[in-house]
Amino acid sequence: MPLVFHDRRAVVDRDAEALAARLAQHYRLLDFGPRQGWERQFLHRSSSAAAGDLILSCGCSTPIQGAIDEHSGVGSINLCFGGSISYEVDGLSLQITQEQPIFFASGHSYRYSVDHFNGIVFDVDLGRLKATASAMAGFGVSARRFCQDMDRPTVLSVDGGRTAQRLNLLRRTCSLLDDLDPADAVIGRTLQIDDLIYRTLALLLFPRLDALLEAPSGADVARERIFEELLEWVSANLETPINLTTLEQRSGYSRRFLQQAFQQRFGCGPMQWVRLQRLEQARLLLLNPVIDLTVAAVAARFGFGSLSAFSRDFHHQFGLRPSDLLREGRRFSP
Image 1 (cartoon, rainbow, N blue to C red):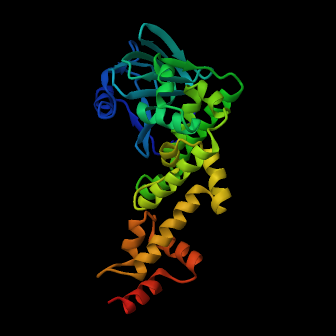
Image 2: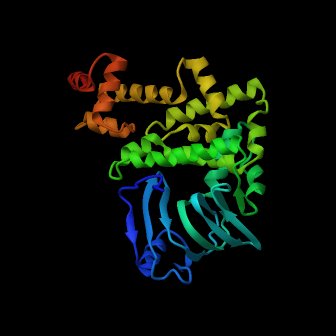
Image 3: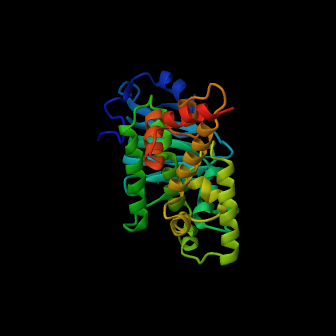
């Protein structure tokens, strides 16, 4: 079975000790090695990829065993697409297979035993996971509401319904990493694959989130006030990274509500509005330039991934090139 991403770039390891040393750089490894009887046939084929702050390791292996130390505030995610892994964690014996394909442990130490595994392993920030669920749930929903769902290690089964759909979405999201150039950090940030991974995990791991997503929102007056505060915050932070999860966390609104509110007020989506505000601030800066100001510096200041993208969007919005406006601004500057 091919790897979910980077199948052709995968590194083959036959030295278990060297691989353990490398894995220990990313995971709190207590023990690692081939299972008894598999020492000579040991083979581990893997590749890693970054998605925002996430480091995902995709691989397949002959039978191995090991142990992971506890890590407060960090959750372990294992996705199984072939083979199986057995776990001993917090007094429980758990197993993932293709029918029960996801293992989650929130900061617990655990031992594992692998039988010809093919899948993905990575760690998540539990604070960000809870904050994502809270933002998705909408106004007034505290992140503390999801703490109980993370108390015990969990194995999820494919039930043929929403769980199967979301697991498929998670796998397809991870497969997007196959098309990313590891050296191109800009496109990785722009796509925000890590944000989608966190959202999908929140839907998978927090059963009460579905009910909260269907619950009615707060009073219209309160929503309007918080929406206005959100607009003010965005206007004051246009030079910092902003994505939909940021807007949800700041406002407590769901993504659906934000889309509807911005569309009703401004005729565009929230991220389109943020981009327009950045272009307007860039226009004002170019009209009143400081000494040695460049178009490239303005583009970088407001988070545009490339000078060409900034120039294209600027020309589309204002009907002239930013370099022409900067030239005019210098003419009339005192």
